[in-house]
Image (cartoon, rainbow, N blue to C red):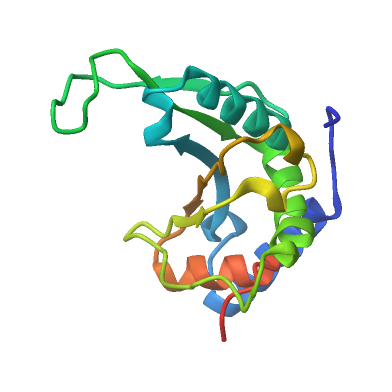
Length: 183
């Protein structure tokens, strides 16, 4: 991961904004949807019994994102889930600017094609604000992971926070960026 990363995705972003302005008749470029941040999170039931599992997951997520992960802890004790207050159960990373675009580039062009039986990402995973969420069962699709060091499968949740005025605009925006949706 290099500082000042300016991949072709920055140029694609500018082209997409111009196309969106034409398509939706915006008054200026700032009305077009924009990718603000990407939040990558991981939590697993095995983390409460085995601290090494959480350490492995944190290490792998840090390798994928190139950024230090923040460990998440439970806010209160819940007896049905067998958790104690303040117990570490997961981690989260928020990517912005250059690291975000670098992650988008690697996710779309390297990781997604490595998914088993891939037929496209669902375009129904948007919330009311236009944010897109993807759940991955295994992080082994990323080339940065050290598969030999993983003892249990690590799943992650990826949330793309998009500033858009409607879900339709967010879907169009991500499609123009190159996200392979199901047809």
